[in-house]
Amino acid sequence: MKSKIVFYNPKSNEGKKILPMSLLAVGAVIEGKYDFSIVDGNCVRDPVAEIRARVRDGANLLAVTVMPGPQLSLAVPHCRALKKEFPHLTIVWGGYFPTQHAATCLQAGFVDFVVRSHGEFIFLALLDALATDSDFRGIAGLSYRDTSGAIVENPPAPLPNPDELPPWPYHRLDMPQYLRDTFLGSRTLPHHSSYGCPFFCNFCGVVNMVKGRWLPQSARRVAEIAQLYVKNWGVNAIDFYDSNFFTSEARVAEFAERVLPLHIAWWGEGRIDTMLKYSDRTWELMRDAGLKMVFMGAESGSEETLKQMNKGGTLTPAITLEMAAKIKRHGIIPEFSIVLGNPPDAEKDIHDSIEFIRKIKKINPSSEIVMYTYTPVPLDGALFDEALATGFRFPETLDEWISPAWLEFSRRHSAHLPWLSDRQMQRVRNFERVLNAYYPTTTDARLRGIWREALRAVSAWRYGLRFYESPLELRALQRLVRYQRPETSGF
Ligand code: B12
Image (tube, rainbow, N blue to C red; front, side, top):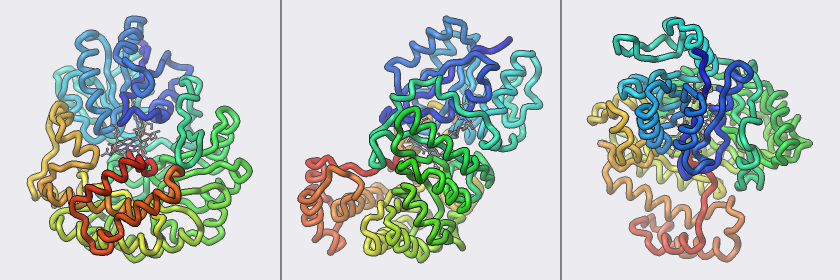
């Protein structure tokens, strides 16, 4: 039977209205071929009621995008309830969580199909198979339960090339509501201009999606999308959510040249070792074309940990410090993410990384530091092996995944990792508070003159003496000034 589809983006954390790009990408390939609509849980109060109405109106396939964390915690009860109410409704999950835990999703009983990795053509093939009553064996990238109830995982599908995919069907959404006021600009929209990442860092969820492949849209196409954003919605800033926007210097330089006349601000995520090799001309071009900030994984101050993360060799603490100095010269703000408390010796790892962060800040005080704890993903490698050796295990059911402790885990703030004690976690949080007071972010326009000075003056003795414990006075002061860091969650 031909499917009529409702796409669903369950509310993501804090309900931020971020363009649901996954659904636009998948919708683009079925536009004109299948009847579909999108329900964005970030934009409607009762998404289940909305989906129910569309099913009553003839929709027979619910296609849900699921990230680990808050989105999963809604996808599970919502899909379970809808399946109970409408047993004929076919439920398909795609996205980061089902890609990594397909069998767990299918075992729950209410998910009929899992589309693994970038799913445009897999989904189209599934719809075609359902329409013609064909079997699913030949559909690479699909997981499902066969007639006997056994779980079948077809081999992985090739990664689609985003440069060859059709344009996103923006007209399916009420675009103005996705314009966000961010530190980059008052009318910010995101785009995702490449698929994958050529690296295999073994703490990263992207590796399982793409296995080291990276396929970009051309500079020309990305610039055309920027032009469309400006023309249609008055956009003045773009955040590029690519896992690795800066992989190709030639592409970035050409993009910068093309968007120079648009006077937009932009942000992206890149590798320190790659970008250190960029010429000064490219850096100047990027700055002149509006690049304001780059998110980079510095990850650790310990060379040993970097090796375990499979970052070793090309990324070292020394080159992160080099980047901190270089990017400062070009007037662009770096956001360095650091993963603290890695196994096996979390205590030493925390100590080393705190000292490393202090070095970065000394060289470039405007650096933003984004602190995470290591949150294992199911990947072969030393780091995951160390985690397993401490007794770490993933949940085996969706209900366990959405328990409060595992939700915290998915959000990378877990206090329940076997190799990390509560005291160590608290130490990281305390240090973060003192650091943010001593070096207040430069990206919050509200935080000017006297407040910056006040935060710095009150925290100076702590920072100087490395005394981070119980910084209650800083918490009170930061609350008073409503201290806000740039958007970092999700990356
Ligand atoms: C944008 C984004 C967000 C947005 C949410 C967007 C939304 N849907 O509302 C915000 C900022 C809110 C966010 C939050 C979080 N995020 Co986030 N986020 C991203 C980011 C940067 C881009 C995702 C994206 O839009 N890509 C573009 C589209 C085109 O690609 P895609 O999403 O992968 O979709 C393709 C496939 O996955 C598949 N697909 C996806 N959905 C579906 C559905 C169907 C039906 C089908 C057929 C196919 C399909 O096909 C799509 C087309 O190719 C990714 C990293 C990345 N670069 O991908 C991290 C990422 C997904 N986030 C991550 C995390 C950890 C989080 C948080 C838990 C962080 C936190 N500490 O709170 C939260 C929780 C989110 C939640 N709601 O539960 C991790 C997941 C890691 C993992 N182990 O799986 C990622 C991979 C970052 C990383 N490198 O670690 N995030």
